Structure formats: C-alpha cells, structure tokens
Amino acid sequence: MRLLAVVLLLGLVGCAAPTTPEVPEGPPPDLSSLRQLDDHPLWTMRFDGDYDRMKNVTQPTPATPFGCSLFATNDAADPLFARNFDWDPAPAMLLFTDPADGYASASMVDLSYLGVTDPAAEAGKLADAPLLPFDGMNEKGLAIGLAAVDDAEPGSRPDRPTVGSVRIIRLVLDTAATVEEALRVFQEHNIDFDGGPPLHYLVADATGKSAAIELVDGEVIALPTQAAVNFTLSGTDETTRRADNRYRTATDGLAPGMDWRAAMDLLSEVQQGHTQWSVVYGLKTGSVHVATGKRFDDVHELKL
Image 1 (cartoon, rainbow, N blue to C red):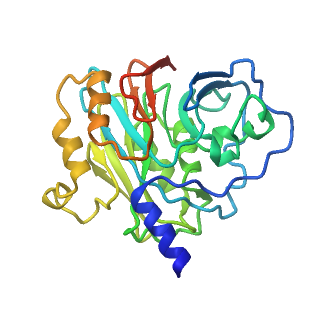
Image 2: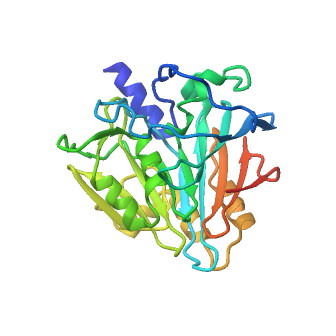
C-alpha cells in the first residue's frame, strides 16, 4: 500500500518513467544523423528504417504515471500544439521517423525510458526509441500528447489488442491524419494502464480541431477542448475545470493568431519546478520548437 501511495503521488506532480524495456535484438539504428543540440542534453536523430509498431501489443505492458500541461490553438490558418513535459531531468531526444507503412513524424522521447545516458555510445538501446513517444506530430498535422488523471476509472476492453499507454501514441502518429481518425485508433485497442495512474490524451489536427480522449468504464470518450492537465475532464463543467490554475492559465492565454513564440511564452506561465522540456508543433508548417530545462529563450527550431 505504501508503494502504491508513492506511485500515485508521483502521478500528481510529474511525468514518471516506465519500466525500462529490454535492449532489442538485431543491429542498432544508423547514428549518422545523431547530433546533440544542448547540454540538457537534448539530442536529435532521424531513425533510418522501419520498426514494428505492433511489437508485443497482445501482451499487457506496464503503464506509466504522467503529469504535464498541454494546449492547442484552433486557428485554422496556423494551428499549434504545445506541451510541457514535467519530470526529473534526463537525456531527451527529438526523434524523426518515416516508416514505409505509416506517416512521417517527429516525437519527443525521454531516453531514460530506454536506459540511455549517452546515445552515441549506446546505439543498441535505441532500436525501440520509436515505440516510446511522449508527444509528437506527423506529416498530416496530427499531434498528440498525454497527461496523468489518477482519479479516472478507465476500465478495460480485453477483446481488443492490448497496447501500452505510450505505444498508443505511436499508433496514432503512424496511422491517423485527423482527430476523428485518432479517436478510431483508440477505439480499436485496449489501453493497459496497469502499474500507475491512467492517462488522458490531447489530440489536435491541421484543421484547428482538438479534443481530449479519455477512457471511462471501458468506453472511449472524446471531449472538445483546447487544454488538458492532470484531472479528468469527463463529468466536469468549465467552472470546476477553471479551479485548476494551470488549466485556467492555459485557456485564458489562448488567443487568435498566436505564433510559436506566444505559445512558448504561455508554456512558461504553466511551467513547474520539474519541467523537462517544452515543445510547440506547427501543425501546418511542420515546424518544431523545443526548449529544455525551462530555458524558454533558448529554443531549437527544427522541421518535420
């Protein structure tokens, strides 16, 4: 019971790491594109080749308690998706993938999930990096990220293929172009939250549409919203939601015509003491702006 209480507490305050997966067999990925962007350290790499996004999906995988703040703008001319990932400092990677049977995407990975401290020296552990996206955007302008909702009762649907709470993000990035298609991916799978608080997900697409996807008693529910933090949106009204400071700050800060800089500034307003990275995805431009360690004026700009 004491261990469970500690796990739940971590879910409330930050984004915890899942059980480190086994080092995959087979040749390591090509590291020719690997480069270090800053001393966080933040790395970037273009994953050259395919991967099995359905690897082990029929077996239960440990879920992960997460926290964080996410929001999306609904400006159809330049929609943005932004998030703070809040947890202990660890090496991070902005990973680019382009599978033959799916959409190209950019996603953020906490390398400690793979047991990696120096990717240049531990290439063999990077083969599963595509399977652990915390947030990301694909070439169709579909973006997704997650946050903990430890008070939720998601239930289960064992008649569907079971995937972990992070793996579902990879399936969405590879196969969904719209919020509706992302919702369908969730409906086709059973999400395994065993081992930690359940999660909900904010998704947005290039039309400016956004929604929170939550699992309630085995049902997948989509709620139109532009922001998500660490409480269940299902069954709450706007007054209740605005009692949360980060939710209120994020929603009040959204404005027509926001550019990436304004979105990054808004992320700085909802930062926590343990914010690891802050990222803004341009859903029509394919731009990725990322800052590490709350250094909101030291932003890396990359392109999908």
